[in-house]
Length: 195
Image 1 (cartoon, rainbow, N blue to C red):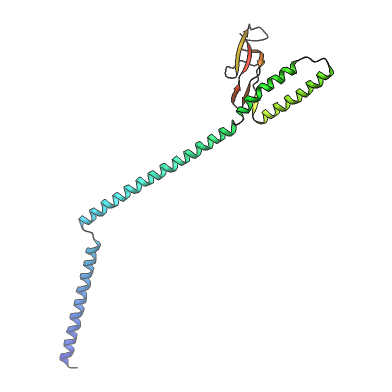
Image 2 (image 1 turned 90 degrees about the vertical axis):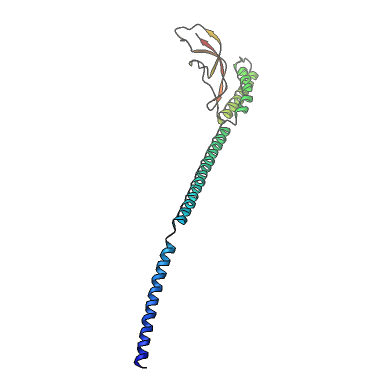
């Protein structure tokens, strides 16, 4: 190669390098411009982002409310089931109470003969088994005689004058026993109260 050709090659190389550098710097500035959003595009993107965030917040709020409502419904159903289970024997108790009353009246009768004594013993056994069955269902007798009168548990049908032995508002006599199922009164006790 001649000197002239070598110079020409060198100039071509320099020119190619300069062109490459210019292209690279041009590409970099184009990339920077592409990466830097224009003010209008930036405003559109911000408003879209804000809309999406609002929608997300709204959906999250709806989700939390729905979850709380489900929890409330579940709790309410559980409480209702517990109450139904607790008081399921209420009707049974109301139906059995008159039978117990009749058996108790039979037990209060005086007995003179041997046969009557055996009959009374059988009635006592039936009465005790009925009481036990009711107790297992949560039905219990309301204590009355000698207790203080409570209008929530007792029904006063008569009053007698109070004395030193029986202060005012004390139950003197029980005419009909009262019963309750757990904390619910099935039938109030019919009582005579000192006044």
